[in-house]
Each structure stands twice: as C-alpha cells, then as structure tokens.
Image (cartoon, rainbow, N blue to C red; front, side, top):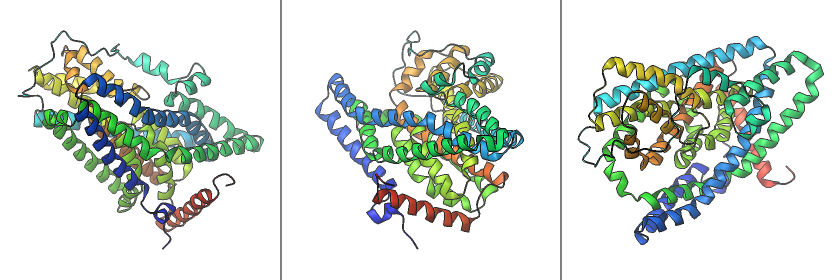
Length: 441
C-alpha cells in the first residue's frame, strides 16, 4: 500500500500540530511563571502571537478568491439553476436541523448540569460592560446583508455569505452560456488551482502558528484559570462531546461505516481549527479531505462556504449554554417559555455571525440585553473564551465536513470507496510531485 508524502517524510501533519500545541503550552507557562506582572506577560504574548496572526491573515487572504473560484466552477459544472437550487435546498435543510439540535442541546445541558450555580467566584458588578457591539440583529438586517452592494467590497471584507451569493449568480450565468463561457470557466478553474497551490505553501506554517497561539494564550492566562472555571468548561466540553456524538450518528445514518474514514481524513483540519480557535484556518484542509473522501468538488465548493455561514454547530450550542450559565450565576430564573423564545431568536441572530471576530460573544451580549440578564456576566467567561472557542471551532469543522459528505451522497456525487481510494492515490502523487518540484510543478 502506498504511503502518503507526509508519512514518507516522517510524522504526519496532525502529529506535528499536536507536538506544536504541547510546546506552545510549555513556552506559555514558562512566560507566565517568569513574568508574574500581567502587563509584561501580555506584551510578550503580543509579540509571540504575531506568528499566529500572520498565519490567520494569510488564510483570510485566501478564503475569498478560493471560495469564489471553486464555487463558480462547481456551479458551472452542475449545468443548470435547478441543480443549484436542489443542492442549496438540501444543504439548508441539513443546516437548519443541525442548528436547532445544537441550540436545544446547549439548552438541555445547561439546565441539567447547572454550571452557573454555586460558582464560588466573585461576580462582576451588574453595571459593568463587556464593551461589545450589541445592536439588535433583525431579519431585515440579515436579508439586506445577504446581497453585496459590491463584489469587490464583499471580497475586501471577507464576507463569505455575500461572496457565495455573487458566485451563485455568476456560476449559473456561465452554465447557461454553455460553450461561449468555456474559456472563462477554464480560466477560473486555473485560478482555483493556483489558490490551492498557495494554500499548500501557507499550510506549512500551521505548526508554528499553533505553537504561537497556544503560547500566547497560556502566557497571559496561565493554567490556573482553567482550574477556576473547570466546572463550566468541563460541562461545556461534555456538551460538545454529546454534540459530536449526534453529528457522527447522523453521518452514520447516511454514510454508514464510511463516516470513520471521513473522521480520520479531517483529523488534521480538526486539530488545526482547535489549536488556532479558527474554523477558517481549517477550510482548505477540509476541502482536501473531502476530495480524498470522494466528494466531488462541485458539491464541496458549494456546500462548505454555505456551512461557514449557516452551520456553526459548536458556536450555536455555546450561545444557549453561555446565556443560561450567566443567568444561573446571577440567580435569574428563566421559564421554559422564555428559554424557547430565546432559542428561536438565537436561531435567527446566529445566522449573521459568520466572519465576525468573537462573533459568539457579540450574539450572546445582544441576547442578554433582550432578556434583561446583566451583560457584565460576559466578563465572567471572557478569560476562558479562547479555550472554549477552540472547542467551538473544531466542532464547526466536524459539522461542516459531515454535512457536505451527506449532501454529496444525497445528490449521487459521492465516489464509491474504491474510486475514492484511487482518487486519493492520484492526489498523493500530485502532492509528492509538487513537493519534489516546488517551483516547476
């Protein structure tokens, strides 16, 4: 059996990421011990995090052109607007169901485990503010935000949802033009290959970025903060494990035992999104994993960007869980009716949070305002939010991977296991060739 290029070189990329995480924690803890003054530690962490910041900026630099080029080519190859509409409908149906399950699970876990009761921590003053923009997010705002005023502006601001909308129109138009648009489709296809090649170069920095991200976080907060919030974090991660179980079970119902293969293929993307606390960082890796799993690019390039706007399962669960945690901490009782209302509001507002830094916190802050729960409660969880964001981001990566594979299966666009294995060998050979000849690939 052929081994992959990563195995020929020695350790697989996922192992390098794990090693980088451990080294990052050690470096961060050494800084935390040697620089007890928080101001100095924060300053040093700021310099260390330059590496992870640059890595995430490089990823964001790629996302817009990558989504546009792969999506336009994918839709152009689908052939007609009816096919696009069908895939869109199936993907949206899955996303809405998964979102509802995630929100309900957060609600159930928070009510069962009661993480906010008997905290044993001083509560922030009710009048304190977390300084987050909390303007109410309405349906009107969401719908008008869907359509870009300018494609260039959407690209410049990395508005994935707006790029998807423009790319859908563009791809359908190219498909309807047929042979007339063949040259343009080929040119955009070549652009997508160029973007994936650049992605390959950027991904070589992943272990360094992971190490820097972990070191910076631990340097400022230390590991003691995890002990203080052990119950809250433990309860939240228990909820995430249950959510992973639901997602994998749903995948198993549609994909059968092949779901295990998919989980093995996305482990690197999972670790990368976990360590950097960024779902976007894993996007190119998930596309590659789905190629190897046998999902045709015309499906993955369409469903994945949509998933990044509509299917943030981990973030969804966190929204209901965190709001109830804060309410419990301040001993505010929310009736079942109020909780269901809150869930429905979050179902809508959370759909607008893609591309917003620490978006979950902004959505939670807006929700707290609407239900007269002290916004100061956010200050309780700000310190550990990065550690929670790691779990949320990794869950988003798992959820989107499974959703894309299931939609491909529904559409009959999933290669058989033998075809997928053959395709994986071809991809490995191409990867080996580009490693051997990085300039003249």
